[in-house]
Image 1 (cartoon, rainbow, N blue to C red):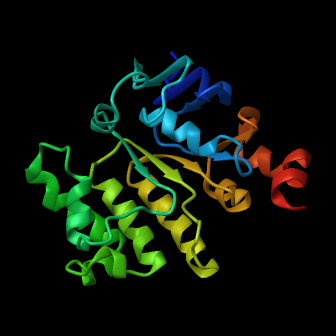
Image 2 (image 1 turned 30 degrees about the vertical axis):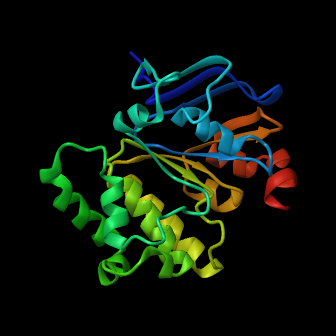
Length: 239
């Protein structure tokens, strides 16, 4: 019997007022994968993540996680079921310390005994954060704030990590390191759905990819096939 997807969007339409943003979206993510969602500005990528999280409600279609519908649930319940997000532009709590930001990531958890274990895991991934635990988040560099945003999301111990433009605003030397860390997080057992404009880099670490254009999925294939696609190269890879 074929494996069921961890996350499934089927026939999803999402509107902002009368304006259609997503139209007839079909998307699946299987446990253990890195899947990337690509497309230009205003293509609907971030709205897809917001729809998964319940920040906006689909007008039609369904969103399922672990085989159960989550469209219509409050965001807090969706997060509690095992989905976390690293938002665009990081959005850490600038006045809080690094440790307090990480504690906020575990806010909905009840297994407080495992907190220290997960904190150690995060600080192992991001040794720089260990050096700055008492420092205000807003005083960190852009790269360090990205580490903190990822670490905060991991503190909820998610099964599925949503990442919205993880390379945005990072110096080129930090982008490659950021994608290496995404691979390491995935190897440690977290499934990743990543929205990204850097298509070349995203496809280099993903298993599969979807391409959005004005709210519709126009390409869906393995990362290898998308990298080799003439349409993909002309439109998104700059070659």
